[in-house]
Length: 142
Image (cartoon, rainbow, N blue to C red):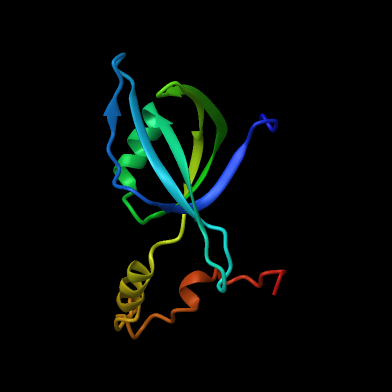
């Protein structure tokens, strides 16, 4: 693993995802990750630009949407450009890997409502639920 240029961040996708094609036919996905790095008393959010390429770009555009939490890791890339005669730099993260983060509060509430629905018992009256998973032998770890 390369450790001299590694960036890891956790945040929410802050824009709608749009998979694009370059002139050479490569798939690219540019998005920002909003990272809350302030305190409750002094809130602050940093928007980090991220670029994903090819298969990673396909996967993220398929399974994520604006507002979803994502854990990203990649390398920092500095691009130099000229803006009206002035030299500028743009820093972004070239995505090398990602993980799914926590769901939004509304989705957690929906899941909680689903999980709190009455459960049906999958066992019949003549089967003891505990005996269904024992072998009949005395396990040494008990």
